[in-house]
Each structure stands twice: as structure tokens, then as C-alpha cells.
Image (tube, rainbow, N blue to C red; front, side, top):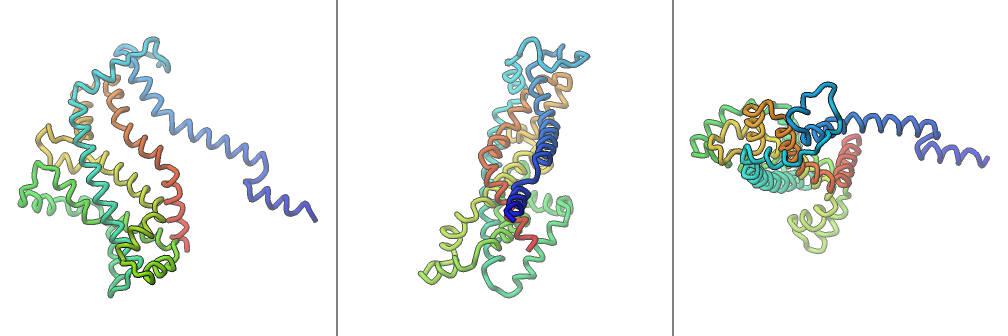
Length: 289
């Protein structure tokens, strides 16, 4: 009689020791496969020109060339374009997250005519490829005098993001409406309910939106390529692409600059990974209901 609960509890905790060992082994293999390209980038960045193409390849160079990081960033005015990308990314994150939170709150909590229809439009817009409106938007921004500026990249971010609005709507489904009602009984407005009650409770999905928005803006290549001509206004993605074309044989310098290029995304995800996993998990559970 007493054995059954123990077996059930053991299965809930992850199964038998053999199953746990197999799961751990699979995770280790997957982790090695994911980390291998990053480790290879590090070794290439620390090698000399001759060691890069040596056969058989050496994992650990005999001499660490830390100067590659200085030389690699100097070739393309790295830090100027780094600042440009950081400025654009910060404004884009603020615009997309704030506007998407407001739109998501309206679709999830406010009762107005056609709410379900508008939500269907938002979800349906996710199926449209981004290049559909590329030519009309180019004519629009050019007529406004925004060509060769950052405005075509920054301004649209303040008009909401369909994906982020959908994520916020799905996350609000996991939060009871009683919190809203209790705050409104005390005289709170919708703005107060959103910013003081729901936003702190929705921190995981907001952090998830911040990570996705920063990554999308930081890696954005096509729109800066279309709208920005002046090299002083280039983003880091454009600079890295020109680096590869101009210095195709200097892979050690390119990898050194590329490691610094991906560093902000790694730092952001490292500090926000806990909220990131909570946000995606809650959204998935709400979608299954």
C-alpha cells in the first residue's frame, strides 16, 4: 500500500535514475552542439593569420593574439556603428514594448465593438511576409524626407508589434480579472490598472518582449541597407557585412569583432533568461486552454 505513492512521486520527479541519466546525456550532447560554433569563434579570434587555415585545425593556438580584438574593431569604425545600433535598439525596444503592452491590454481587458475582429486582424497580420509593404513604405518614407535617416527604423516601432501584442494578450489570460475589478472598485483608472497592477505581474512576458525586440533590432540588416546611405549612420550589422566583404581573408579579425557584436545579446539573455522562460511557458499554457 505504501509503495504506490512513492512510485508515483518518483515518476512525477522525472522518472527512474536510468531515464534521468539518458535525459542528462542528451542535454549534454545538445549543449555541446550549441556551444561548438561559439567556442570555434573564440579560438579563431585568438589565432594569427597563419594559424587560421592550418591543417589539421588547432583548437588551442600556441600564442593568444588578444590584439585581434583591437585591430578588428579599428578596421570598420566599430564603436561608432556600435553606438548607432545601441541607440536605435534602445528606442525600438521602448517603442515596441510600450505600444504593444497598451494594445494588448486593450484587446484583452477592454470591451469595445469589434474587439474580436481586431484581434483576428492582429493574428492574421502575422502571416503576411514583411517584404509585402517594402516598396509602398519606401515611397512613403522618401516623400516624408526620411531617406538616409534612422526614422524609418525607429518610428514604426511606436505603432505596436502584432507578435508582442498577441503575447501580452495570451499572458493576461493567465491573470485573473478580479485584480482589475478590485483596483477599479478603489477608483483606479485603466492606466493605473495596467501600469501599477498588471505590468508588474506580467514582468516575465515584458522581459521576453524586450529580449525579442532588442535581438530583432540589433540584427536588423535589410531596412538599414535600404534607407541608410551615409556610412556614419550605418548600424553595426551593415558594418560587419562590409567588413566581411572587404577583409575576407582576415577571419581572425572578423571573428574578434563578431564576438563583441553578439556580446550585448548574450548579456541581455543571461540576465533575463529566468523571466524569459517563465514568459514563454505561461503564454504556451494559456494558448492550450
